[in-house]
Image (cartoon, rainbow, N blue to C red; front, side):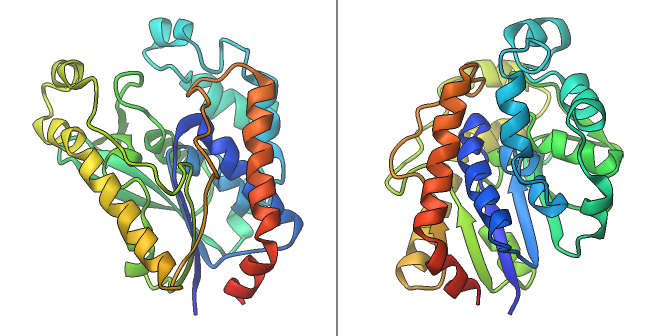
Length: 281
């Protein structure tokens, strides 16, 4: 049996995931492998480095800092989440990511980005936690329209949630047969069509496959939710999700709101702690 952890994105809905992961770390709950999408990657990588509380701590500390995320950053750099601050200054200077612990943990960790030329998901296995992995995690979390595409080894990438929002099937295809999924939307959430398609068609006019991918994202997402729910009802999967919509801004600046969502993640994990331990064996 190989245990896997699947982490949905959702910008600051990811604080819910942070709460769950910190409960896992406090209770020595580990996995053979994990995959994170967007915020599920940027925050989820801390489970491999074993840094309990880190993602919540730096988000709460810097959420009002315009260097972290702001319209000012979008106007001046083209990225609403400032790349230099988020992927250089923060992990290497201000709240250091434990690269050695990440490297030495045998748990496999993947992140998902979307190849904007093909509109298909790209799955990257983070091996060392060094700069190449950081750039892939950046690509995974680079939201369309408010982020510049990320260039890696001749490819061009954006947010992985566009092409594979909850990559359970990826983990299953890679031999993970006992998976736990962390969703950031409630069980009855149904995604609608993209509201900003005219702007998408203009901004991404050079990438027709990406435009098609974004047009059809709601279909992919809702099918993944159905697949997960079906396996959950059959007892083949354990899912942790919010009890209700989290109602938090993608660039939330209220530390109290971040804490509210984080604490809800902790509450859901603690409520299900015995089930989690029994399920993972």
